[in-house]
Image (cartoon, rainbow, N blue to C red; front, side):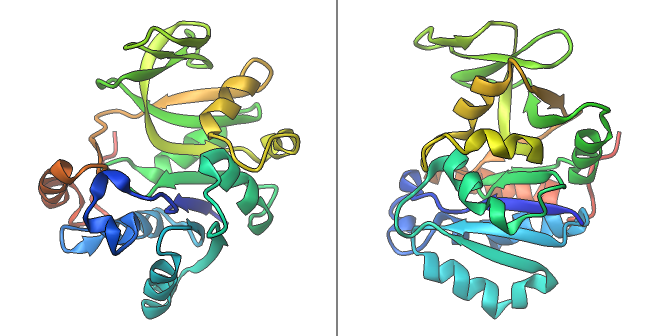
Amino acid sequence: MKQAMIFAAGLGTRLKPLTDTMPKALVRVGGQPLLWHVIQKLKAAGYEFLVVNVHHFAEQIVDYLKANDNFGLDIRISDETDGLLETGGGIKKALPFFDSSEPILIHNVDILSNLDLSKTTDFGTSVKSVESVVVVSQRRTKRYLQFDDEMRLIGWKNIETGEVKGREGRPLAFSGIHIFHPSLAPLMEDWPDRFPIMDFYLKVCADHVIRGFEAPNLQLLDVGKLDTLEQANIFIETNMNNVNNIIHE
């Protein structure tokens, strides 16, 4: 069974004043909430079991899913109303919901893309060794993941400050989509309740393979600010009206 987690717990401060009265996950683009777009994309790719973490206006997300009968899927809620756990802590808290023998696709709720999620999952499960996968692309950003010649994660760099974690290599931008391999779960036991997943990946990548997947012809939009909403509407019109119209190369 394909299983996935949607990060929907964020405060959405960059989308104020919209997020003064609703969670970022329910901000509408293309006539539908961001959460709807991600769920439909996962459903079209064959995902049947989803976990959605919630914090800011959590009850609105819960009510929205109930009102839509969970879109015909098995959807569970990972409740972070007592405190945001960041991305790594969010995964750690949600792990008991998942089949511990299967990889978990993680998707930020504010990411729109033309990525073929089925193809990404196939890449993450077809490798012979035990690996996790991060989807990356060649696009401008302030912080880049660093990869060796075999596309193995080896470090991170902030090009504005010059800060480097690990080693430098081929710089690629993280997409907000990744596949968490269950073999890494025991390594989280000694981590605090709250931590970023990328800090975890950078800590363990020397001994455990975290591989980058550079999606061909990837078009991606991070709907993080008010000035990106109009871009998001255009993006939806050109890329995502038909959730089955996914690029295959």
